[in-house]
Image 1 (spheres, helix red, strand yellow):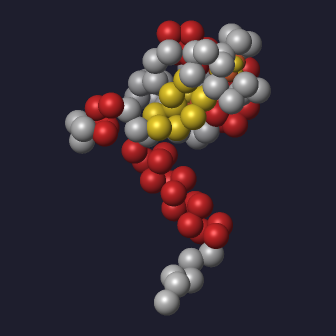
Image 2 (tube, helix red, strand yellow; image 1 turned 30 degrees about the vertical axis):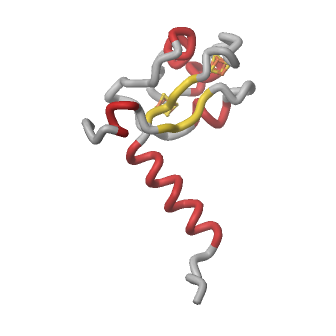
Image 3 (cartoon, helix red, strand yellow; image 1 turned 120 degrees about the vertical axis):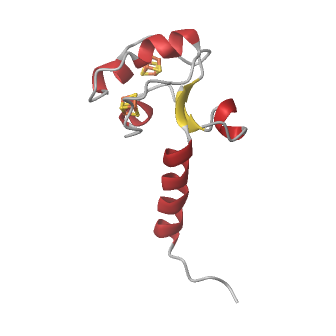
Length: 90
Ligand code: SF4
Ligand code: SF4
């Protein structure tokens, strides 16, 4: 029998899991250095600089609120587990 989990709840659980285990990870090849991500970060983190370097947002202050991911016009940001997290190191 199929589990009766509403689609929206299933999505929320997946999103919550990613937020709990992931970081914002940039794709520098897609980034045009517009700075919209940094402008919309409520903590003022320099997301654009991370995207320039192609490094995950490793700042412990990151709320994983997703504002930068949602606002990037190039789709250059996503949530993903980092290598350390994949190894169970964090
Ligand atoms: S909003 Fe997207 S394209 Fe613009 S600087 Fe940030 S990561 Fe790069
Ligand atoms: S997820 Fe939120 S707090 Fe973290 S860098 Fe993006 S906008 Fe800033």
